[in-house]
Image (cartoon, rainbow, N blue to C red; front, side, top):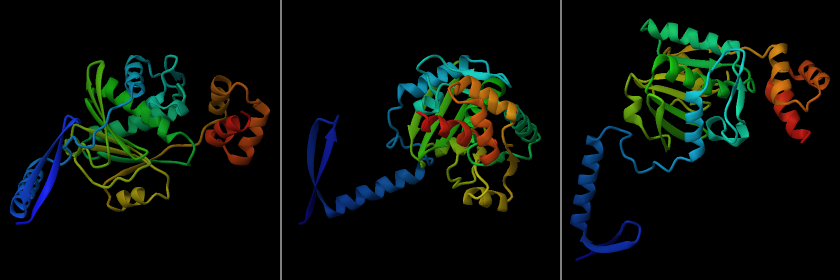
Length: 272
């Protein structure tokens, strides 16, 4: 009788080899499939991985910080936005961030709108808005569960007062949370594959397929993030990019527009 030899690692050290007949293998596969269908999507923890301490430090700092419009949100030394060093440890809380947040909350509280697309020119800081948005949701609206998609990863943030539990998975994880209307799902330039029960915010450029799909389905409200003002560019230059010449930045603004990615960030990298 043909059989399979299956090896099962225990605690990553001991391995047990078990000989199984074809019939037993098929029976076990059937049981596993049945259990999978019974369980809510997203509850399997197989793909969850260890979350870097940098992400936890970011949230501890954000929950303790004041997020004031027109001022800089500055994190402690060696703590970075979303735990990413390339993002730095500070951002300008633009006035339009508050306007967008208030519009969403007004529509959301009416009970008719729960899905939003934040659009705007690439490079104006829609991803940074996600930081402020999540901070205000937790601190002002007492949201306890946020799922955040960015750069192919999915994070689950669960809040208990000033404490937060952070889990990381892939794009198929935490679906049980997404099917909870108390959850907020923030998608940073990624695909909004599903229309779920969670309140949803998609940060997107105009030409992204998922943005058009959501609008065509009439399940989302589009809100536009404007370009930066001259004062905002100068404020950011003087505080975060002080080595850049103000006159040069003004010249670049005439060429590229008031887009900080092109007139501040990339120029700073080029000038080392």
